[in-house]
Length: 147
Ligand code: DQA
Image 1: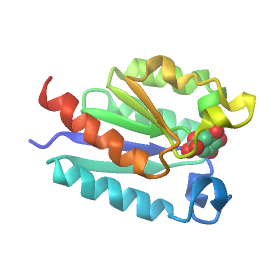
Image 2: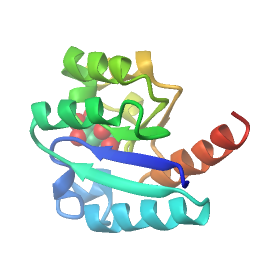
Image 3: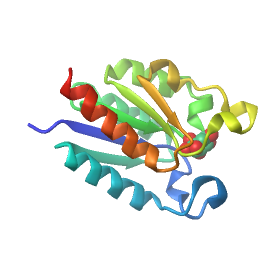
Image 4: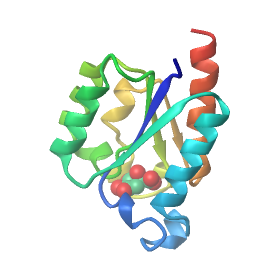
């Protein structure tokens, strides 16, 4: 059976393409999700995608990932910097997590320099634009083949 990779995007990422394009670029969320499905299928993965602006919806989806997906790629958006609850949900899921940020958060405001999610992530990809999602899925291919 194909491994399933879950690609999660948090608040405001539905606005990709329109939102602050000098920071986040011109690609839309649909472009990003299509990229993830294509890259995943190139590695033999099934890819499921969810974007939500509602923290409880995100937490429920993370819980449902436990025992059902091989890896989570998550761009938690602003919850990165604020949400102990997303951190705790990811810890409870016991699924390997790769954290992705389109922008280089370390080059931006100080409040973006801390991540609750990094504490439960295998690795963090930031500043590579939407290419970061591809890098994350490529890394899962390597990680899961050698597991
Ligand atoms: C982001 C960075 C966050 O600080 C911000 O709140 C976002 C997007 C990124 O992809 O660069 O919503 O996660």
